[in-house]
Amino acid sequence: MQLNELNNEKLSSLVEMIRLTKPEELTCDDLLAYVATYADACVKDLPVPVGSEPVQQHLSICSECMEEFQSLVNVLRLR
Amino acid sequence: MLKTSDSEAIHDLRTILIRGLTGGLQGKADSNLIEDFAQETVLKVLAGINSYRGEGKLLTWALAIGMRVSYSELRRSRYKDVSLDAIESAGRFAMEPFFDRTSTLDSADSPSILAILKDLIATILTPRQREAILAELDGIPQVVIADRLGTNRNALYKLGHDARVKLKQGLIDAGKSVDDVRELIIDAS
Image (cartoon, rainbow over all chains, first blue to last red; front, top):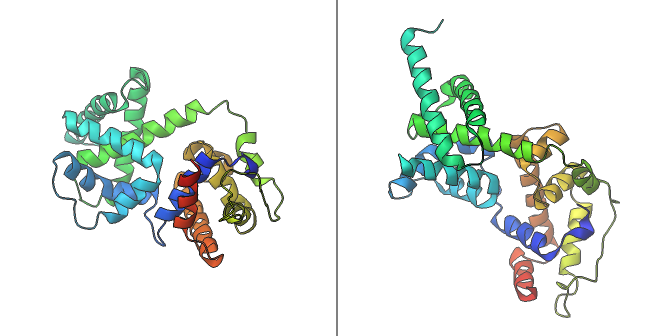
């Protein structure tokens, strides 16, 4: 994509990502170390585990990790 | 050498993964592919077991890795025939200020805010940061972008994060907050 093809929809996505950006973030690999605890809590409707903010922040910004997380939660709910 | 009990545990893990991935992928992959994904996941779990932090259930952690493995391969497969141009073109445009006055996002109140953001993308990002950000906005999966940039998804995320931090600071330095830009987009939509 060229810069002049950056339409309103894409610009809006970028702005939202910039808005959510923190100086320090979990990477996609970092997320794997923490996501099990968070997913287990979501499935059991338990309170959000202490220290989950970086997990939530990464999921809010990384649509691919979010897609994987949602599939994980769906599976855990079936078990 | 694996003990019998280890072999049984691995067999059980593979079985659970196949069942979990079949449910989680909801028809996105056939049974042969899912068996391959499960096998690759078992190898990754065994290789990474020492890094398992003991947080959350082990099977949840293994399933999370299984989802990562499966979706990565499915995304690669979906884009295997897509031209390189979609990614490479993003890094080719001139590194000079870019002022587009034709966008509907420009208004009398904020005539330059979109131009500032585009200008920042054009001038303060490195070519690789620009390629990564623009390709991702174009909906190209991270694993595909990473493969073509000769890196991996984790490093690509860091590249994109560094770019977002720069853009955020650039907007602040230009006297614009991200909320200013966001408000303008909402008004224009």
